[in-house]
Length: 126
Image 1 (cartoon, rainbow, N blue to C red):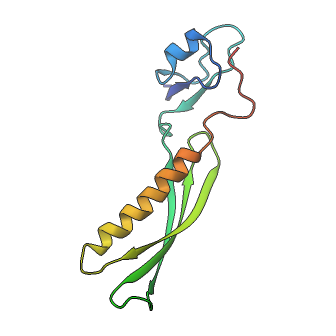
Image 2: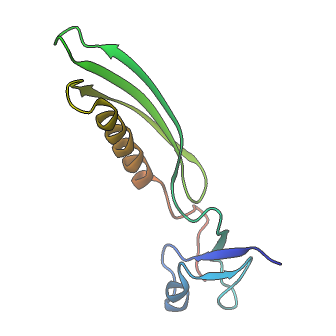
Image 3: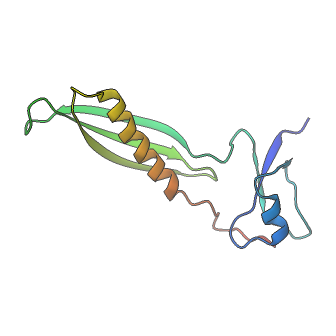
């Protein structure tokens, strides 16, 4: 049995392709003659995925009782490639430090995912 795929219409797609965008189709499906849109395996699910979160904690010598947490995040973009960035957050340990840290890491991952190119360089609909 052929694995289910998702139809991906990007860029200046025709109305037929835009109406199929995100629908489940067989692998290699084409909407019409000369259609160059793509299908991607459902397993990829067209979502940006975080692939690494490297976190280091450093005491903040400027303010007693605070922690500076630095981190690097790498995400895998839905149509291939990776995006990476580093960041930091000032954590007050009297609050919920783990939640503060993961909120900052999650925000950076979301920003990286937003920067992913969802239109391949060679994309043409028709």
